[in-house]
Image 1 (cartoon, one colour):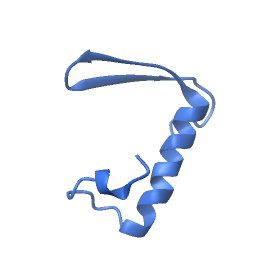
Image 2 (cartoon, rainbow, N blue to C red):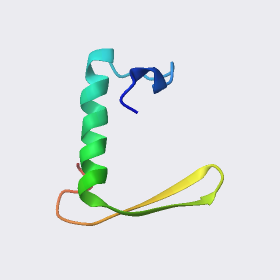
Image 3 (spheres, rainbow, N blue to C red):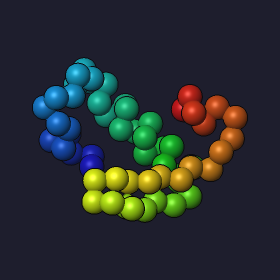
Length: 57
């Protein structure tokens, strides 16, 4: 997902901010992702380890 071409055309985030935002998501998942599952074809469940401030992150 490092290729910026995966970003949908509807994304309103300025192009120069997209790599930074993707890096933030990567860091969050690397640090906090416990498990993921797909209970339905169009639904993804991500379980994150809690700690103070994780919602804001």
